[in-house]
Each structure stands twice: as C-alpha cells, then as structure tokens.
Length: 481
Image (cartoon, rainbow, N blue to C red; front, side):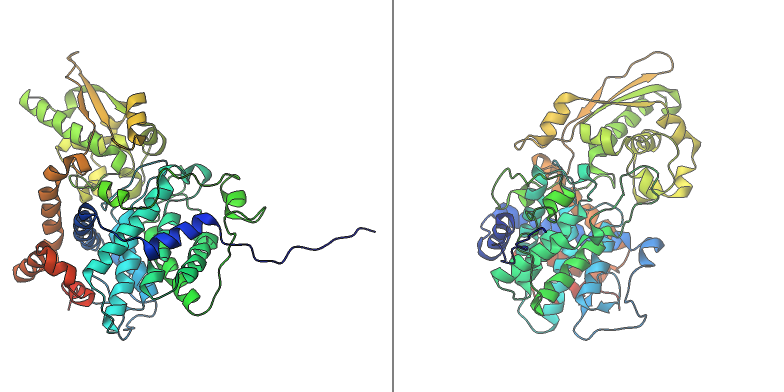
C-alpha cells in the first residue's frame, strides 16, 4: 500500500513579477514631460491608424455589436463609426481598427510588438466610464498608455515569446488588464488577481501569424487581446479571484508549461522608458524591421531616375539587415495576401524601388499582380549584419539598420545606401513629428469634412486643453453620425 500526504492546499503569495506590475500601476507617478508629450503624439497617431483601417471592407466587416443594431446605454463609442457598445466589445472594435494595417507604433527588443494596441482597451473603458458620469480626462488616458507601454515593453526587452511559439499580443492582454483594473476602481490586490488571470487565459496565447504556410495573419488579434483584458478586469470586479503562482507553479505554471521552465528576465525597473523611446511608423506602412530598407529603396529609385534608368536595369540587390528581420520578414516564394506582403522585406523593398513609394494599397491583390515585383524580389538576397543585430538590442541605440547594395545589368554598382534609424525613431523625433501630424491629417481627411477636421486638429494641438478634456467629448470628435 502506498501512502500519500495529499497536495498542499495553502495559497502561496503572489508571484513577485505580478506584484511588481500591480505596484507600478497603482503607485508609480509619471513625471516625465517627454513621456506625456510622446503619449500625446501616440494617441493622435493611433486614432489616425484606426481611421485608416476603416477604409478597408475586410476590417469593417467584423466590427459592430454581436447582435446587429444593439446600442448600449452609456456604452463605448468607436471612432470612425456610429457604434456604441459594451466596453468588452468596444475594446475589440477599437483594438481591431488600430492594428488592422500594422501602421501603429512599434517596440523592438527580444520580443517585438505594438504597445499602442493597448489603446483599444484603455479608450473603450475610459469612454464608457466618462459616459457614466465619471471624471475621466484625456490625461488619464495618456497616463494609462504610458504605463501599458512600459509593462509590455519591459516584459519584451529580454524575453522572447515568439521563440516559444507565443504571440506578442499576450503582452497586450497583460498590460491592458493591469491598467484597466485601476481605471475601473479595483484595489492593488485585485489588480494582482487580474494580471494573474491574464497570464492563465490561454486561448489567445498561441497564434501563428509569423509561421510559414499557415494562412493570413489575424489582424484582429490585438482586438481580441484588448477585449479579453477588459473582460478579465470586470470578472475580478464581480468577485473572481486570481491564481497567485500562475507563473512559478511547478508543472502547471506559465514558466513550466509555456516558457520552457525559464523565468522572466528584466533589464530595468518600470518607469517611462518605453513610451519615451517608442518607434512610430511614419513614412511607410511597413513591418518595422523593414522601415529603413524601404527608405533606402526610395533613395535608390531616385538615383536610378537621375541616371535615366529604372528597376528593370537592376541585376541584383543585397540587403544587409538585422537577425530579427532575417528570421521573420525574409520570405521567398509566392505571397498569398496583404499580410504576407507587408511582412516581406523583399516585397516592400522591391515595390519601393519600382514605384518610389509604399502605401497601404501597395499590398492589395491588384497591386501585387505587377510582374515586376516578383521579378525583382527574386534578385534580392538578405544577409545578417552582426553590427546591426547588436545595435538593435543596445539600450542606448535601439537602431533598426538596413543597407542596400545594387548592381545593374551593365555591371555598374551603385553606392551602398545605409539607413540605421527610421524617421519614427527617437533620434529623429524632431524630423518625424511634423510628418507624423501629416500622416494623421491624411487619415482624418478620408472621414470628415473640412470643418470637423479643423476642430479635431485644433483640439489635439492644444496640449493643456487636451489634457483636461473629458474623454467622451474627445471621442465624440471622431464619431460618425
């Protein structure tokens, strides 16, 4: 006969990693002017990216309430539409339009991602609370954005989720759940519960957006993460408890089940570093590892034009790039859809060398039928540059370098074009900010008449007035009648 003493039923203390996030959310005071100003730009850009996504019918087709025609009293209003939804469905809608074109901000580290995805959850909850009469201002949104960026970005700095088959929207779910919990009035202890539930809610952990031959990317993955985050926060508010050792529990915990037994590693404490150094996609709607390659390709297009030549005269192209780009956006063979094309450095570079530009419509089927694109893709070879890979991770540089060397059919070799920092990088912020505003104006222009456009621009450019503005009044600027 065997004797078992049974499983220890004592609840352990919460994992320190989760306690640290909750402590940051509830107790850290954001005092960085740079972080707040960058957050303002990020809010403007992210709303604009959502409006741009709405121009595509595939995006619009999955929006709105689950039951058509439902209007929720005091519900979340979705920018660019006339929908008024519960905050969970509102978070899905807003998160989906933000991320549809992959044109919103970016964070590159051991794990990459788009921290402004979190605005889907933040704005949905903030707008709902404001319509209930709570005093929620745009500054509250900016603070929540800074903290969500920081949580997602610091978790990403040294921990590669993609290497174990986990998509980065997991971090959106965790960061959004953490900041939203405070917004709806939960205590620090309840925020610990919320964060633990965000790690254990596994249905959206594994996606295969970057795996070969697995079909189109789920452009609504960020919306899904935002809606799950909001749902978890409200479940805890209704009395659900957390799982204190969700990360460290032997056999059953996140580390053992999903992270190959390795605990998270942290480069720095939570502050405002991520928002201060976030990357904006300004010039091109291109996956960020290729931004500088596309910029270099446009330079080559102009050089060829000066010489009286075109992309037809190109014999070969060598792209020196970073390890991350080699691994996730260096594709060969047929590209089947929008998502394949905007995640292939060869397609993006070829298109820019042929046309001298790259925009959202460059990835649609009609554009991709140009036979010159695949012909030039076949002439491109990517190689890893060790310096680019090292400086990509350097905390004081965080470069995203690419260099293109073009050889022509007649044997002429053009000067190599190297670009280390994209225009959306912090090092080019002064150059990039006016261009970011131009991008926003273009995105707003598709949806609103000149009078409403002026009202929107006057509002977002009045920094102090914007900070104090109630969230529902802000959202109403972007709502369709």
